Length: 218
Image (cartoon, rainbow, N blue to C red):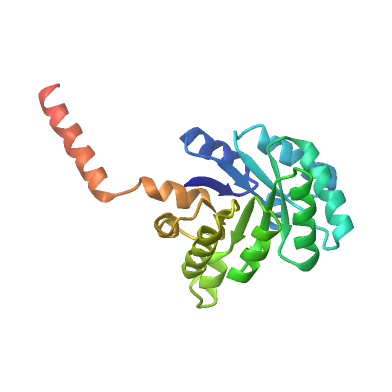
């Protein structure tokens, strides 16, 4: 399973990269705005800054909703850096854009996916990644993990190459559950990754080892 961090915060991205388990980054206009990154040139520069920190894929989202504009924007994003993956929303013109990008060697991440049917369309159009938002489904009392399982079954049935990128991860158990189901990638906050480190018995055991060491080596 690949670990992506879902943020535009360079400090958090650097911290995750230093941990040694980071495979990529996902961003969106909301995350950029949260960091105070506004204006086209500043946003494009920020994407490059992110690429210079991490070794893996960096999803950069188009803000256009019409096919021709999506293509123009996506091609511009793809030219920024070889690690850029163009993030495209699951709408009619988005599916058309996914197919265009796939035919022209530009990698894509289909975002805002909330159903197995949408994920099937994305795979048919040649998306590199598909991003089902399980956390947002959980927020409205719908089983987001079940959606991941449905997509996994469909993709396995037909040997689609599209990778399932479990998005809108809320906490560490989402990561574990997605790994059990077979999601190819998870993307979430740094806290969801760091949560995997923690267990009270580890802390208790380490403290005992150190206490025993101090007794015999003081």
